Image (cartoon, rainbow, N blue to C red; front, side, top):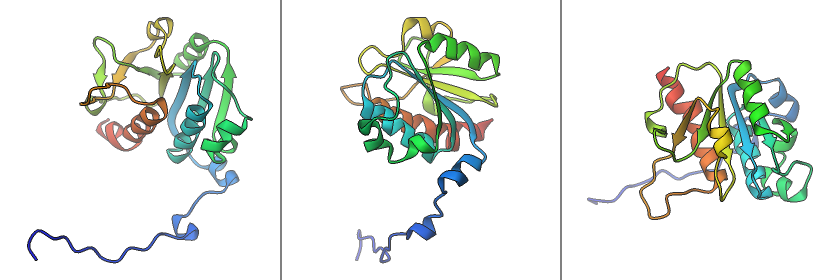
Amino acid sequence: MRGWIYLCPMRKWTMEELNRKTVDGFKKADKNKIVVVLDNIRSMHNVGSVFRSADAFLVEAIYLCGFTPQPPHRDIHKTALGATETVQWEYSPSTVEVISRLKGEGYRVYAIEQVEGSISLEKLETDADKIAVVFGNEVEGVSNEVLSICDGCIEIPQMGMKHSLNISVSAGIVLWELVFGCRGKV
């Protein structure tokens, strides 16, 4: 029939077929040279979701800064689903200190923020070997103090009325692009 698409019967992959890593296997795996910095995130569910995305994309580490909640907490674990046990993380009261340290270690640091002169995510091309991405507070975004020391800003293009995404959604989009998209343009 014209206009119809016939699909083959589908079967879900088994856990063995998914080839999931163990906690030890994850810790020993080569990581993508990407770190995530969370600047004063208030929601434990967002923090847990970012951990889960960081696990999915083999991110090196997460830095929890300012008043961002830290594991262990049941609300973080609820969305992280064990990723707090696999992804390396560190707490610092100062996002600025973390970014300064990362820059000293050779990371190119990008805030994920809508600012004048930001790079649209799909147009990002980078030759950076190591990248840090900073996600800001759900209401205020990345602080101006932090923005002033970043190497640039990346903006996720949006077409709707709201022009904002939940931080956990933004993290998933950006990490996917860094692992499978723009890094291929290096």
